[in-house]
Length: 373
Image (cartoon, rainbow, N blue to C red):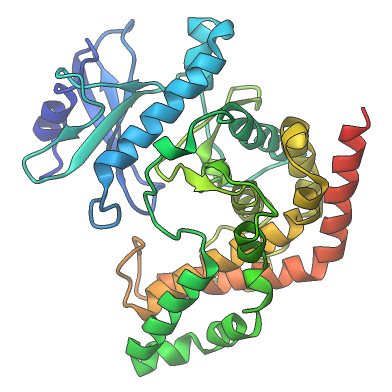
């Protein structure tokens, strides 16, 4: 479908929103799906966020939309005591179609969903100070709290083996066999790092498979830009729940640290600009554990630093694999974008290794301190 005012308005009007379309603009921060801000004509009407799910990446796009609507409904029930106005700021509100479906299927076979835009909210592409790190920790920790009790059997696995390290390694091996000599040469340093860290990077998966870390609902894309803040930089709501699945809490903690503690953007090509901010790590961990300490164990806390290293590594591995596969998964802006992203992530892995002992100490001390209150 061609993206223009007429077609976007047509899609928009298939949903039961009771508002009048005025204009749209595309939100370009995401790597995969197409997302549009819908402005409505009347001052008392809500504005909306309209999304087209990338069916090339998400083969079960319909189930993806059903997943996130069901999770939002679960959270809404837990937050009913807040009242309608506050509730609409604290959880995503999805609008069904005029035929009472959570999605619209267009003539091209693409699935669309729409949610109410949370007015007065803002996002950060990078953490600017300790306060934002702490508030982000509370938000993502509270998401784990609020999804407790949701029947995990009702969640469809949107991306099977999403954080399974053995699966990601197999994808990497397959990409190695088919990669061009030029891409292999450009990726040589990253490839070496992947082989050297193989054993350590399987530890979390082994703990999960052995039942040492319990399964729960996880967000699986906890970068700081997926947290909404109010004008006073206080946390409001977790957004972008496309990859809500069953996993372990370490997936969400690790992915958040990956973006929060990196002092550069994830496609920064000057690796000297990348450092690991330990103060942000401490602030985020404090906020996260304040919300989750009652439902995680000391063993969980002892592996939070490992989670940060593992999820940063797996993101680098996925970007590297996509580069070797000629960039078929992530949206890229230039020829070597994915290998630049991979180098960035692997530099961060090295920095986490350098700070690992201190990160571990912080996680355990914060956990014990909060549980003694």
